[in-house]
Image (cartoon, rainbow, N blue to C red; front, side, top):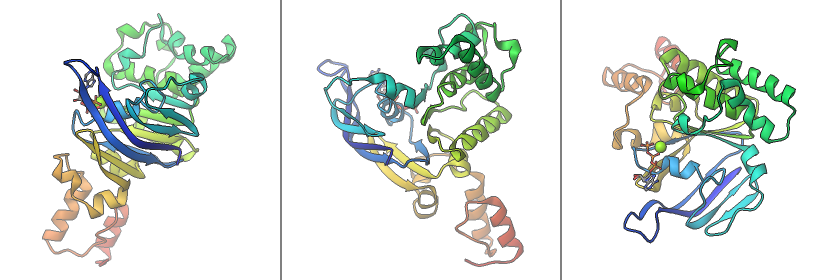
Length: 283
Ligand SMILES: Nc1ncnc2c1ncn2[C@@H]1O[C@H](COP(=O)(O)OP(=O)(O)OP(=O)(O)O)[C@@H](O)[C@H]1O
Ligand SMILES: [Mg+2]
């Protein structure tokens, strides 16, 4: 396991009237090389959980191990820099992540901070911006004058520029149009195929269905599911119980069942599903 979380609790503003237990005794893990989706209702603790993965916040109870580095409640984390390089976290709200005068400088910041030369940092930044679909006309613009979707792309480029071993994305396609969202998802899929562990928070179960390998589901600060995507969709009704929108493929499977049409009832692949209908195939 590349990340192992042990009885982790997190309380905001402890010992004050605002004290709030956002995570309670969470034990879960992330497999190396997986594409792990983290789902759950708003306020369930998803963003709070992933902010532990690069020690942006540290547990108020329990511990976690991230690629061999142990982080224990109420103990200062030593040598943060290697962890920050290894675990790239793209925030839910990208404006928190952008602070330089120009987009190119913003994306160069990370590599420069990790000791890369200016020329190399520029080359890395340009390549990262191309990967997220921003061409040279953006280089000298201010991040402040961008749309929400463009800001998100710059924030993602800034993290890609560090070539993290673990890429953590907090609702990375929010604010993107369907085409932008699809191209961003295929970028993450390619990174995953070349070995990057991807952890993605999303409200879009269709993305979970199409891209994830593993699922962690939170509800009110506790883990209510962890396992494979197949188990999540085929053996639980959790996506319905918690009011998430059903992906079209599952909707189709329900309709086919009602209509008593034979098909491969376990596949989550639309092409295999279509082929099985053609062949009148039972499970
Ligand atoms: N800075 C904070 N101070 C106090 N409480 C907070 C703070 N940030 C978050 N919380 C509370 O902690 C709980 C978990 O928040 P978190 O942001 O982790 O949820 P989430 O699952 O990411 O939600 P969303 O889907 O809306 O992004 C929420 O009830 C939230 O109100
Ligand atoms: Mg969140």
